[in-house]
Structure formats: C-alpha cells, structure tokens
Image 1 (cartoon, rainbow, N blue to C red):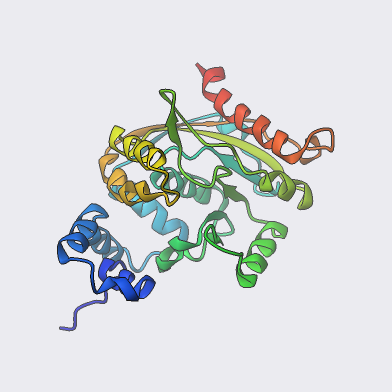
Image 2: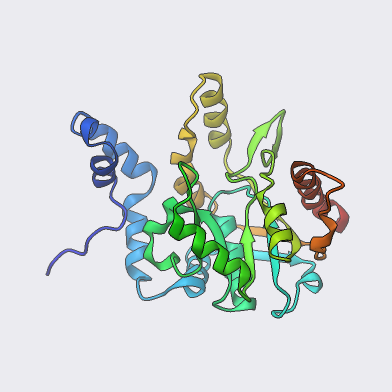
Length: 277
C-alpha cells in the first residue's frame, strides 16, 4: 500500500524554505526538530481526522486532547443575527484558538471565521474557517479579499489582537501590546466587539526560551518551535473562559487613537476574570 503523504514534514519544509542551507543541516538537528514539534503524532491526528473540516475538525481536536471549558458569561453572547468581532487574549498560542473556535463555531455554525497566521493554512482541515494574515510579509491580495468578504458577511469573526501568544514579563504572563487594526475593522464593518479572556499558560520552559532569545537580541521568535509540545503538555486540562458584554462599535470614536482604544480593550479583557471572582 502506498504510504500517505505526510502533511507535516520538517525535512521537506527546510528544503523548501532554505534549499541553500538545508543540505548542510545535520540529521541530528532535523530529527530533534521533528521530535520537538511532535511531527509523527500530529501527522497521525491529521490522518485520523482527515475527513473532518472546519468546526467539526476543531471539535475533534478538543476531544483528542481531552480538554474541558468552564465558560462564564454565556448570557453575553450575541445572537447569530448580530454581526460581532470577538477579541481574546492569546495565552497558549494553539489550544486556546482550537477551544474557542470549537465553542464559537458550534454556537454560530459554519459561517464562523477565525483570523490566524497564514502559516497554519498548510493544514487543509482548517482552511474553511481560517482567515489568513501574513505576519512575515505583505498581505496577499487574495487573503485581503477573503478577509473583507468575511467581515462584510453575516458570520461571527474571532481574532487575537496580540498577534502572538502571551509572554512573561516581571513574573506576569500576559499578551504583548495589542495591535489596533481590530479597532479600525470594528468601526469600518460596523461590528460590535465581544471581549473574551482565556485563562491558561504555557510551561516555564517556553517563557525561559523567549526571555533568552530576547537577551541574545534574536528577532525571530524561535521559541515558537516549542508550541506544538506545549499543546501536548496541556492535554487533559480544563480552561476557564470569561465572556464580556458586547461593546458597541460606535464606542471607538475619534476621542482616542486606535492604539489607545486597543490598550483600553486589552485591559477590559484582563478584567473579566477579576469581575467574575
């Protein structure tokens, strides 16, 4: 029987992205990378759930990793007819997006969309609900058109304004400054904003790697290599999700700059858990 082509292949990715240097990378290094990102286990999961797509695939992943959500503030969720933009902190960089997409997608149907790094589009099961954002170059015209169509459409949209998962600074784990683009998009497309706080964290190893990378002056977020492993470390976990009341898009007036509104919104998100306790 012909072997099924692997969706995740470290060696092939290196040959494609850096053909000039890939041949000189020792096998021990590529083997370490493959183990670190759980290449075999992820390919096994993708193979077993190959027939599933979008929200159904996300729900299968929640079951695969045996995750539970303790959701607070369900009464604040808008009706399917209300076009909203959901904004959340991003503590995990993987499972948080999976959990929220599964939860919101189950409530709002296949029209639900999630804004993600375009690197994730190599997973075919996710393309139907993901809106790609190129964080390493100019936005492709096709992706921009797809994003605008979704924002003008009837479906709910989820985004993580930090653009990357939370880091630890001064002993506190929190998002970096939120990018203000979601403020402009909420106003432009007349979408009320629904704040969500996702209660979770990665391992100390991840935060130490990020700190050393910063101290060494390395701009590339090399600690992201560990994110797949962080997913597996968080198996069998229960996460708290705190949902706030929708904030009218008219709130984001010219009285403040978009950057100031983004910071204000970020603070509102982090206050959600404290208000519930």
